[in-house]
Amino acid sequence: MSWSATISQLLEVLCAQPVNLSEAALRQVTSAIQTDTRMIKGGEVFLALRGEKFDGHDFVATAIAQGALAAIVDCADENSGLPLLQVRNTLKAYQQLARWWRDGLNIPVIGITGSVGKTTTKELIAAVLATKGRVHKTYGNFNNEIGVPKTLLELNTEHEYAVVEMAMRGRGQIAELTQIARPNIGVITNVGTAHIELLGSEQAIADAKCELLAEMPQDGVAILNQDNARLMATAQQVWSGDVLTYGFSGGDIQGLLIDNETIKVGEMQLPLPLPGRHNGSNFLAALAVARVLGIEWWRLEGGVTVNMPTGRSQRFTLPNNVLILDETYNAAPEAMTASLQLLADTPGKRKIAVLGAMKELGERSLELHQKVGETVQRLELDALLVLVDGKDAEAIAQSAEGIPSECFTSHADLLTKLKTFVQPGDRLLFKAAHSVRLDSVVNQFRGEF
Ligand code: ATP
Ligand code: MG
Image 1 (cartoon, rainbow, N blue to C red):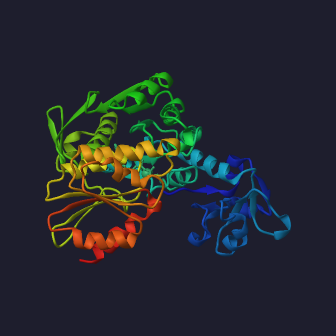
Image 2: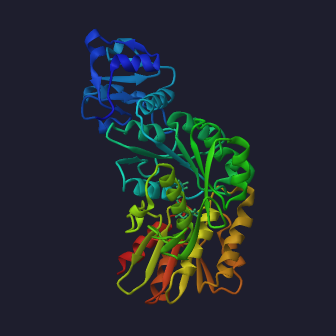
Image 3: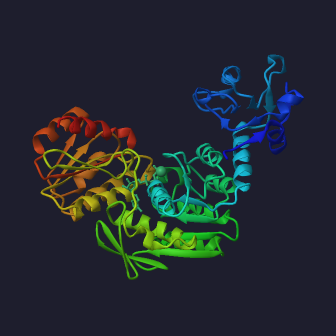
């Protein structure tokens, strides 16, 4: 059974004021809360959210005309004749409904946060849990104050597990998401420098991520990456409940990377659903979740399939045996290092890094771009091509001393270079902040074949 409630139940849960709601209207049953009028098919309740560029309140009449039973609003016009539930804040109402629905379902909810690897770990956990039961997971990157309630409201009574990604743009947000999702298991993949501009320091980032633990119900289990010292130290201060640790350096679930495709844990050797050491770490988190939920690891011996969203852990082999690692969705400093390491570890003729700027790094920007260049140098890659479209990108090339490198100021110039430079057997990594739009270069380059 999917989400359902009577209009009078909604009024009660939200302590809302009824406007133009008849006795008959109060008894009506709705099967969904919808915030997008384009998705209304009939029978839903429309919830008007205010965004930067839109205000759902402008679409209330459309929603009702399209078949919505009523609308949840924060300013109601009685004279409109429209059936409304008036609340103080519609976003809070959305979150309240999500929590109410979640609380009524007796299933394990797994909450995931961290500086990098949230979506990947979410997908891996979901794939592991799917070997045992029906899983609902965050769709794409719907991981914020709107995405988390949306995810929870999509749960139905058939689901046996929920895997929820939680992201933040500042202090207090993970706490808020945790209060809504009330996870039984909280996973923190790592803390690093992603979006450091927003919080100021790595410790502030660690504190913000650990809000997941501070707000988790006391009988929950924390799953933590032991390889991340700052995370472990910060978690200890806020969480006194059960903990399961994972990592390569130690932990309850300690992994040994056999190669990019295989990991060994204890006596068991398992195929990695996604390649590379960083994905090995993410997989260990999924194994930890399986352990807590009593899901036997032998189920994973034949491998599990994970379909990553566009621009993350995507691999394309071109007809001329050129391998493209497409990581153009985003680039945090830790993710840059991880992806460069994967490139270096991938067998092939030449290893070529095609990089662009990282964003939201504030005062640390120059230093962190320089570090990327140093990583390219340490890994002894064969070539570095940098799209200089954004602050400090040039510093990547300048710091990669001894590595043949070239900078480009336009996507077109970079593409022209790739067409002549790349040879059969080469391995290429494309990675930059999303706004650099390196994905357009990947697509055009692939289109050449
Ligand atoms: P977002 O903030 O965009 O939601 P996210 O935390 O969900 O990011 P993913 O989308 O899973 O992160 O991964 C983004 C990139 O980070 C990947 O493409 C990969 O390069 C890198 N990455 C993934 N997992 C790890 C990890 N455990 N350690 C370091 N880098 C990682
Ligand atoms: Mg994500």
